[in-house]
Image (cartoon, rainbow, N blue to C red):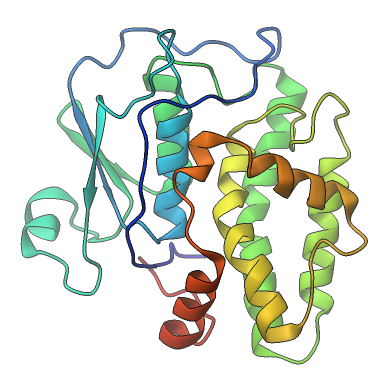
Length: 256
């Protein structure tokens, strides 16, 4: 699925905390790698851009300050995109994009990994090969999940979304050392959170379908995600998201 577009603003803070990470499973990213201020071009209501925003917030350094000073947010008005963005920054003219070390990169999943490996802070990607393989499987499935939701929204049957959400429920039961997809909080959780944040209330509103009914693992995952400050700082009001989707896109996700 091509990366989607949503518009609005949201507050963010400098200090936050995330769950402790097990150093045996996750390696620390190299310290001091990024020395100059970088720029994250974003839309505050685009779920793909939100992924990278969360990753940026989650890289808490030893002084408990994230990357707010090292990666500055640059909001882009997607309804009236400035010509300089396409001409001088990112020719694909989409968000998110990251300007770092005199290069501009795009695509949310790639940017999450890049931030994790290039900046100081706790690693958000597993070191264990088997866990890494499972993480890649889940990241690849995220587009399938999004398509399944949109297919169900457009039609009468809920079979597609039911199957997709059941996949998440099963995946969440694989590791018993925490409530997240890999047990501990990781890039996989960041990849899914912005979309579940939107689809959960939207499906309730449009289809009267609660994705957490009969799925205790998913319900617990949502509850625990909502406790993570790095994610909370990026969230919007659920009803605002529903209204935006219903009004602007007829519950579809056009490209950012």
